Image (cartoon, rainbow, N blue to C red; front, side, top):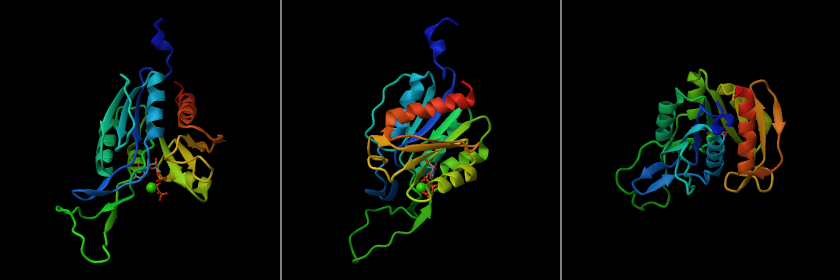
Length: 224
Ligand code: CTP
Ligand code: CA
C-alpha cells in the first residue's frame, strides 16, 4: 500500500492498556484508593495510537483527558470492574500493558448506609482483590503481555519474580528510590526485564518518553 498509514508500525494491531488507581468502596460515600495519576497509562495509550494501534484504555478514576479516534476509553471504578473489562477485551488484542495501580485489598463488606462515627477506633476487614495481570497471564495465547512493578527494595529480584509468576513477556520496573520518579509525578526511572532475562536500564525520563521506549521495545519483540 502507498497510503501514509502503512508506515505506522502498529497499524492493524490492538493494544489493551489499564491505567490509574482503583477505588474500593467502604460505604456509599467512602472508598480506599491510592495516588496514581493515570499519567503513565494515558501516555502509553497516546503513543500506541500515534503508532497506528487501535487502543482499549481501561482506566480507573483520573483527571487525565484524551481525545484520539484510535483510543476507546473504558472507565471503571473498582478492581473487580477493571478485571471484568480486561477479560472482556483480552481475547482479541495483540498486546496488553497493565499499568494500573490496582488496589491489593478491598473491604470485605460494603456498608449499605454511611458508617456513623462512634467508638474511638474502627476496624475494617479487607480481602484480596483478584490479580488482573496474573489472571491474564494464566489464559494468555498470542498476546504480548506487559506488567509494571513498583518496588522499594530487592527491586530486580521482586520484578523478576512477578515476571515469572504472572507469565509475562516483559515487566517494567519502576524505581521509587530516585528523586522525581514515582507514580504521581511526570517522570519515571524504569528498567525493562523481558522473558529472555534481557535487562535494560533507563535514565530518569518524562512519562511520554518512557512510553516511547516501551513501545519501541514491544514493536521489536512482536516484529511489527
Ligand atoms: N496488578 C493487577 N491486579 C492487581 C494487582 C496488580 O493487574 N490486583 C498488576 C499491576 O497493574 C502491575 C503488576 O500487577 O502491572 C504489579 O503490580 P504491583 O503492585 O507492583 O505488584 P503486586 O503483584 O500487586 O505485589 P505487591 O504490591 O505486593 O508488590
Ligand atoms: Ca500491589
